[in-house]
Image 1 (cartoon, one colour):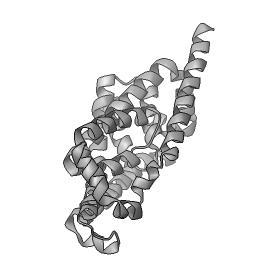
Image 2: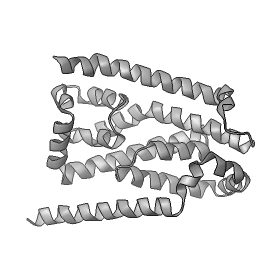
Image 3: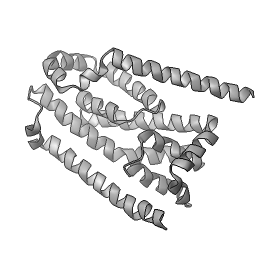
Image 4: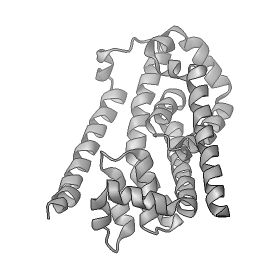
Length: 239
């Protein structure tokens, strides 16, 4: 009974934390930084501030991204921010490590505290996943993370039903998220460079190699992921 009360209290703290984060996110107008018009009008002061305090901003971003993913947040918004602010290389490194650490902490906590509830939800929501688990849990989970259609937070929680080791989970998450994260960060980095140069953000920007190469790579990644999904997941669901 004591454990049950503890879980309820922990869930209450979690929901309260999420509510506070969402409130602060919109209260301070963080979404404005994703608005091209806002960035164009304030680009000089914004990029000057970023260059002056890059290490501090990078540290805050890294910690915040870990917390964001741990709170079941999706990875696209932090990755977009990283590309715009830090560029391809630093943005990719900060993003992939923070996303992986946040996901691993979420998996560890969920596995210890809410394993039964999460297992029942996933088994009912995605029965095919449970049906297709074989001895190679690492490989299955790796490809499972690559296919589209499953929310990022759900992907982070699915191994709760696998009894997966922490080290295997960390490695599978890191390498499966590596390609899409680098592509998205690189795409936004190209947009960030255009903003720094004072260029207008329109369809003509797609002519730039730093823009169209990540777009093509993203399209190929989604295409390959869908082929894998149909060949190894969808087809089995008909049997």
